[in-house]
Length: 317
Image 1 (cartoon, rainbow, N blue to C red):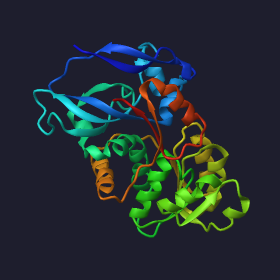
Image 2 (cartoon, rainbow, N blue to C red):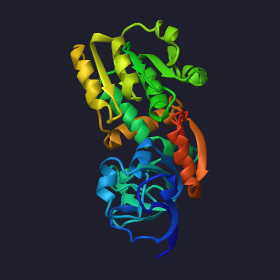
Image 3 (cartoon, rainbow, N blue to C red):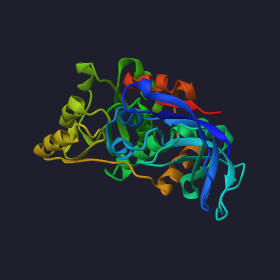
Image 4 (cartoon, one colour):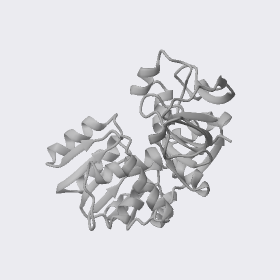
């Protein structure tokens, strides 16, 4: 078998624990596909896991070295005997190994045929950035809440990886959308379609916001708690960060609101819907930075600033 490069965790901790390693490729199962990587996406959950936090870190604590990452795009180089819908040479993207296996920080990956979606070669960058963030946004808006035409939606952190996708697909559904960001990102979230762009540090800017039907909290902490004041009495409030979920739900409930947290799950149907919007140019995934595989530490440091516009990728080829 050939050898390939992977960015692995040798232990949990700071970005210094990310180590480029040579590993031997694995044999292919009958329902599996081997994909030579073009890009992998770096997500906040990767940063959290690297630090030793969360279920994936706990599940893999005795399996180090271990490879992070869930979002992937590339080209199929080999297919198993029972693979029917994919061919060698197809360009694909997918959510792989979610939530406990991971493995996308790698020059090549193996995953079940059902994990992959055929995409245009010209979409490999955006397609790599889409799965985890896109599915989180979709499920927040249409599964855990019920955003429809004319819904009034407030999205906190509208310029981030999940947020900038959520703004666009909410607008595509016919919703009215307000989004928060730093002052430097106000033009960006307006370009995505925000009907009201709010500088979250500007007290006066919040005064323009009338009550909303749905709150999507992608920030957590005090920001989410304070935003509950803008939800209608019969509205729905959802928070994605797990660390402050309990406090968020407790306060929302005390205000008489329907409130929930969420855990994203894989969905082939939802991925197809997102890719359809991407193909029809109704959805654009913004990539603010791309790093080589051996620069993964820099990619993690970028996300740790908490001010990344859109997505960050690793270049694998």
